[in-house]
Image (cartoon, rainbow, N blue to C red):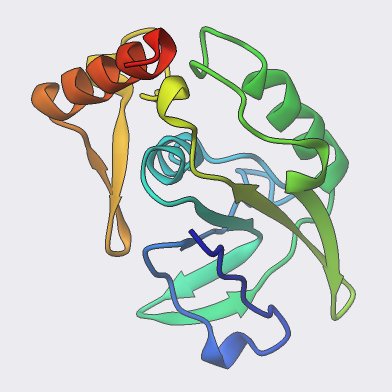
Length: 164
């Protein structure tokens, strides 16, 4: 599948979609924190057609504003630590170039490119239970996968690994 990208320089034209999710990621102190629901988007994108998560953008009533992240480096470190923690996420499917720090109008945003997981890697889920931590992307939303959907992904993964 051809992976679509978008340009961050015109905020007025941006919108969330099946492949784009924006998160404010300000944290309580305003210095930046990875939001917990970002992991749902990671799972959803990995289990469907891939996508991009942009941290540092505020949405209010469909209007997007570049807020930036004052201290992005600890957030990037946190992302890599948790991506490689099996109790947080089932598998890290990102490459080093998939997390980027981008500077726009003297503000930093973090761009996370989540590829579609290979069939044998699915389901990609958060936590330690596939049935409660698996998400799919439906339009602009991250939706819990049903038990049936998770079971189908597990069956397809087993078939892919066994060469059927």
